[in-house]
Length: 115
Image 1 (tube, rainbow, N blue to C red):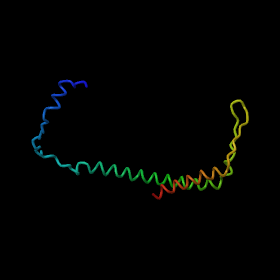
Image 2 (cartoon, rainbow, N blue to C red; image 1 turned 45 degrees about the vertical axis):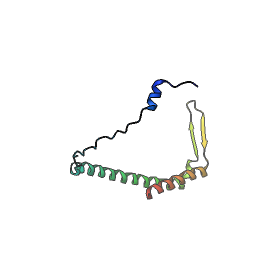
Image 3 (cartoon, rainbow, N blue to C red; image 1 turned 30 degrees about the vertical axis):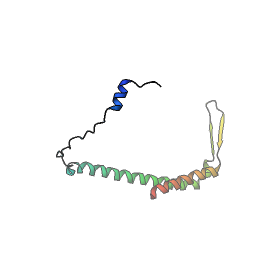
Image 4 (cartoon, rainbow, N blue to C red; image 1 turned 90 degrees about the vertical axis):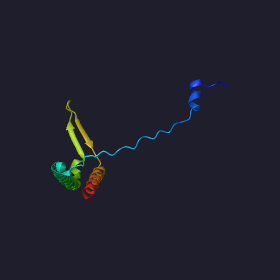
């Protein structure tokens, strides 16, 4: 059986020392002064409140427009155009699928509005 190197043997045979650091002294720390930051926090909170109201209005408009889209859905089932060479192109979509997508947007937007 091979012998371990001499340095490893010495390391394993030396007793381990326990080092206890000196107790740390508590230095006085500056307290957090709220009065310095109140103006900035108030400004940011007003901005976030306005932003939240804008997002709520946007979500409500989204829900209203999708409800309107459900009633005029049949006008958007066929899309027609002429390409660069003058060829007539047409895409026809299933109205049931468009209804399902509009309904998903209404439910998702309504959920986020209520939440």
